[in-house]
Length: 163
Image (cartoon, rainbow, N blue to C red; front, side, top):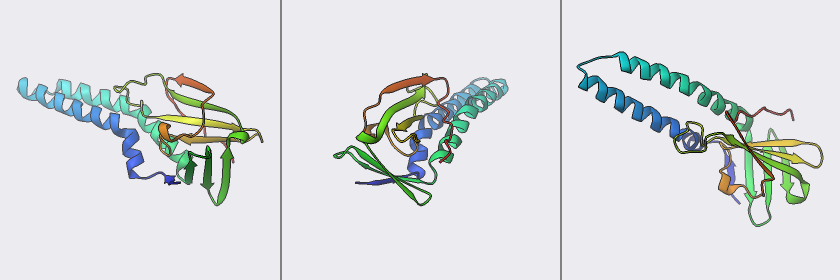
């Protein structure tokens, strides 16, 4: 059983498509600049477009970091259980404790979407509590439970729930 927490690699894993997109935009802008003898109009247009495209991605990323920054999670695939440590509290979730699980992703799950690597699980428990786990903390293939509902929304922004 491995303990997961947010680290540098989880930030890069989620932000990967955005970094690739920025790199491609810089290369295309540089090529255009040199082909057109220093014309900067397109560079400004690309710059404004990338800033506008980055705003929702950055908002989602900061949102997910706020939700999971103090969490550590242990996944036991064999027992189909998750143990969450947050702010000194320990919560163990087993299949028998779960009422429903909703996976929320963005509308575009293609590799070209800047937020295609962002998603979150909403786990509703029988005791009335709801737990959120974001893609910064746990990859989809590591999630040990069957998802009841999958919903696609324009921007997978998660509302932090009070403890």
